[in-house]
Image (cartoon, rainbow, N blue to C red; front, side, top):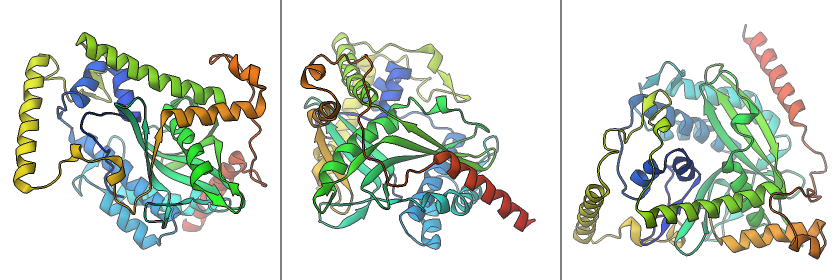
Length: 393
């Protein structure tokens, strides 16, 4: 899995799940990262944690996409971007630990998930079918701001054109609670985009695909060395709240730009057992930071001219590699699709009077002919793990 990146266009403002999380945690940190483009101090432990998550995800993605075990392990190794002997003993994260996590997935959830689901395939810009691994999208919000993301895996039911968002997570926690992920914007936002992609980019005969109202989190607990699966069902209300919340963030950022002040949140200065990477430079004036940014941009422009090469800011979303899966939408397309779903279950007058924060029914979305029982799946995995351990002993 290549290191993920976002397309930055001249005069455009990028939002993603992570930048929105940063903005909510501390507007000043968001400003340092995304307005002044400062580079903070990253600890060794932090880099190991990131490398561990990337590597485990790369191995799982490759295996689910039908690649051989050896190829999947190669992609796991390639995704490790820390020192090969790097280790975080506290969270039990290292390259050997990432390989062990991959092997645990291989003999547990890989077998059970594969019974009913496979990695979806969509056509890229070349017209070739490509597995939906790290599917990339961009949503134009207002001509200036755009929301981008990478979906870890898109799964398709093996018997029906039902598509599901799967997010891969790693945590050092020995136990996970549904509250850690249930109301996360990440997979919810991805499911809205997937709903649009499934209905427009997938055609099987005369029928189009259907984006599931469920999202799936597959979480690896490094402390206990086991995976746990967490399914969540979303509603039209959840989707509407996400889209409105996204536009509210744009409004607040524009307001702070106008005022010229992004507030600090002192409670975010020390998090995850370390100080914020911008802690030592947070009090620099905006004038100083702006001057540094201008010098940096001037140097980058001069270097690009010397090399006669295009700088990242001059690119656009359509110029991504043709063999990659990337989709480009406008926010109104996503809004129209959700209104369309509402029309499927409500009469026109009710749709017009729809209160965003009121309660309304879930649409009857076609489900797989044999609905997956995730509790049963989880039990099967645990029983197979016990049997595997007994054979090893």
